[in-house]
Image 1 (tube, rainbow, N blue to C red):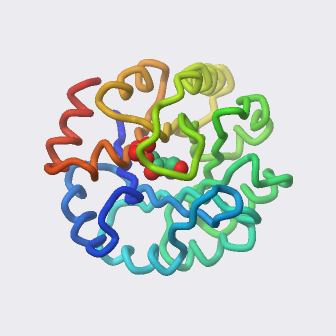
Image 2: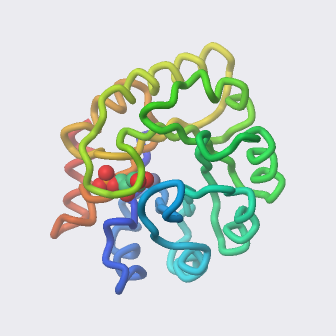
Amino acid sequence: MVKIAPSILSADFAKLGEEIKEVESAVDYIHVDVMDGHFVPNITIGPLIVDAIRPVTDLPLDVHLMIENPEHYIQAFVDAGADIITVHQEACPHLHRVVQQIKQAGVKAGVVINPATPVESIEYVLENVDLVLVMTVNPGFGGQSFIPSGLNKIKQLFDLRSEHGYSYEIEVDGGVNQDTAKQCIDAGADVLVAGSAIFNKENRIEAIKAIKESL
Ligand code: DX5
Ligand code: ZN
């Protein structure tokens, strides 16, 4: 079963609760993009917003940290109600330690790689993580075009999982829409993140249906 994780980055923040309610029945996770203006050239939201949306939905909150020194903020996001916390390989010189820290805090741990970062760079944490996120845009903004080289990484992660009996989910983020989703699923992705392809559409349920029907 393919999972859909709408990214609230493209939602209307003045009515975030309603926007989440609108898509809730058709999706599996709520994807929350946290940006600090250092790791990526944009600033978005922090634990306060995670705390505010926590009572709105029972869906897992899939928190994608695009921040430097994520280890300083893990507990704050756990306390706010995150269910999955994903950190960038590029932001963590001690990635293994941060993954352990997330798990010890009692939530699922994910690791994410940018378009220029190879799967080999996370090889030694694959046995420890619950989720691997492959970026198919350079993180920072919604609405960018899909970078197809991520497909090879999805395939590689799919093969490594079968070969070693790992249990992570493979998630893909950036430029995913009804034209690109099928390639991701065919390559082995389990979870599709989509922001603009859902929230920039008039009818969000129809938009989600269109992605599912394209697969
Ligand atoms: C990009 C974020 C994505 C973004 C995806 O930095 O991590 O989650 O919201 O937006 P779309 O689906 O519009 O590419
Ligand atoms: Zn994201």
